[in-house]
Image 1 (cartoon, rainbow, N blue to C red):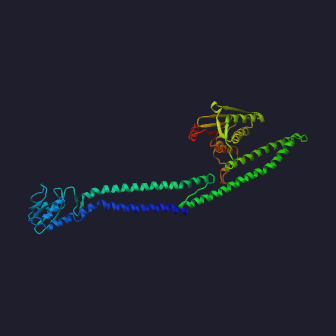
Image 2 (cartoon, rainbow, N blue to C red; image 1 turned 120 degrees about the horizontal axis):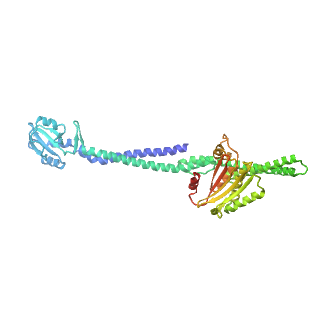
Image 3 (spheres, helix red, strand yellow; image 1 turned 45 degrees about the vertical axis):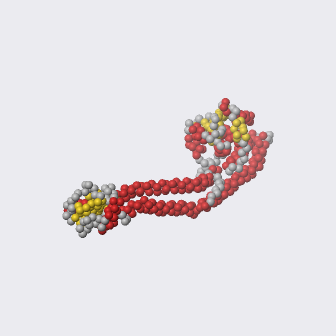
Length: 467
């Protein structure tokens, strides 16, 4: 957490630094934009300064040539009134400016405007000096004056600066977000991997190195736990084999011995049959453990699935299918010659487990059907029966309730059936997908999908599953 805090603090400090830099840049931009306006309108050429400079050389006879030239260069006109309100002289004044002003006229334009022109006035010993500016140059209040050019420019400046600031902040946010996501994505992936009970390895530098070390440490602990669990299961499986073989041997000898009566022989046969189930359960447990912790080597080769299914069915029939059961194979023409790159032993084991499930869960007998089909993208193998089926609750439990080897939470009430778990792991080891369907009193169906080739396997599976 300390590393994560440093990592976040680094980005917060960078963001604060960027805001300060933007404020500095905004101040410089403001000064750069309005320096000329401020210099002209509020500096040496401001109306007040021009008024003072002109009044210093103004009299009833006129003003100096220098003052007149300065007014013309700055597009300013001037009018001089005597004490009676008569215009004594003017320079550059518009035609609409009157020749005579009453005291009421003076009171009106003294507020700031004369015939629409912003004016500035100064009383002298001989009369009154009036300086007039273009109509779109200044706006005046009774107590101050404001540059129209400044006021017109200011909104565009503020909007422009804000737009640039938001653009920069958005780019920084976008870049920071991408960088944070890029840096945190391996961490999230590793955590998800750990959450699925799989070990992982993460290598990172900088502020997040501490988090990577913690994840690697947790992964090492999980890996050792998985290894210990797998070794324990393997050891128990190995230790059970010898006494189990002895039980099976003695029970078979008793069951077929001539000295034992029929009752004892029957019980011995039951012991032998249950011992066989225990042996198969131990084998399943060992194989599930190896697949779960990726310790089972998978030997793949190109296999004709149609031939594999026919071979399995023939072997099952030759070994003696119990009374009340039948098995049929349906292979489409497109699937007759399909070659699947797989581990034939594991695929046969998956099919055998599903067939044996149908037999075990339908003691009164049922019809079992194997079906093989393929398209350009997927291979579909289904095993179905018309037995007692599953209720909606049982189907939901089988699909959603985790197996004890798929969870490290000992508080959960987890199921212990290995058959479907083993099938699912075999299918996933071959890049496939599995779906279980069941209908009460109408049988069950397990569909196995395997990729034939191409990138659209998952999309195709989703579309088929929704049908």
